Image 1 (tube, rainbow, N blue to C red):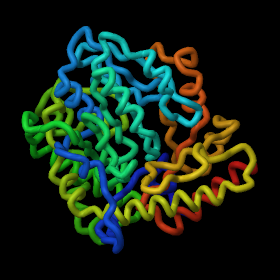
Image 2 (spheres, helix red, strand yellow; image 1 turned 90 degrees about the horizontal axis):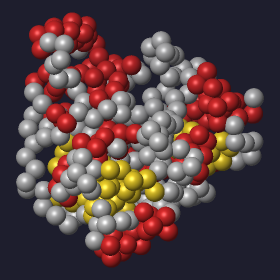
Image 3 (cartoon, helix red, strand yellow; image 1 turned 180 degrees about the horizontal axis):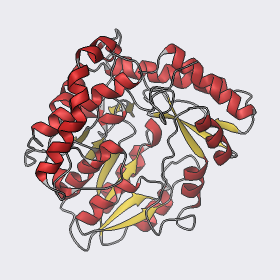
Image 4 (cartoon, rainbow, N blue to C red; image 1 turned 30 degrees about the horizontal axis):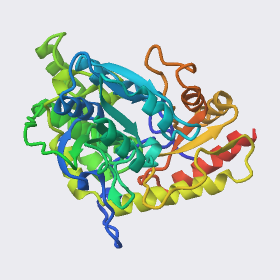
Length: 395
């Protein structure tokens, strides 16, 4: 049995957590990331990177931005921040871009298109790139689920005019995103620190996530006094700044969909940037692919469930394992009762987006249960996850 780290928490971590293994390098062929696609700026979240990309493109009031109907609600506020109108296009039953609908949605006011690589599976980008070039619109490659990997001989993110990424989905950090461009200089973007309180909060919260699941016990013991004082310190800082004071960390760190323009010109924390330098993309990709393969093998013969995709493409590094369930609410309730963490991407939709906008998006948001397959899962944890999945599917 696994011990519950804290009341109300899943029994295994949904996202990467800090451990000694985070620093191990793996031999073999180097693996490319979105940061290899071009000029890069490290920011605090993917939604901040979207806002910067739209600003660099010159999106303004009266413009339209094409957004996938299968989306995170955090993708839309940056569009509204620029005064533009989001227009939602359809996807297929496997979340592939519906090229015909996309072409139909491009109009005279269309300024930019966002394309999402869902769950770490790259979209087929060549025809999308050709369409954008032919119609004179900018392409934003959304790599929030796809920080590591290659497609068509290029690192992810190299097909777009701009690419955005979310490093916090792939590394054991409390915040982190990136804006990258293979086609344009980012010299005009000047980022500044969010301050000492932000730097301290990110470092301590990143460490605490690991401590909650039994990682780095010696470090936890050494930091026991500072961690005990942390809550009181944050309370004093907030009281000192007043009720309307800026948050010490971006809303994305706490899984909120909110967008605060105050973070647009803030750089990622020193802690997160250090983790990026120390990270081993080859090891991360290899472990995620291995865990993905084990989950896929465990599904064989289980009733009412199957992988969203029949295979994991070469060069892809999954964010999570997208499980397509016939009875998703029942299965989700069983898994959560067993302590299994889940992600339900695409819920809630932006107001006004529903099954009439795109039936496949509504189906995917309802039926896909995303399971963790990240590199920080231990052998015991991945075996436990498989056992619970089998139990829940056959109950």
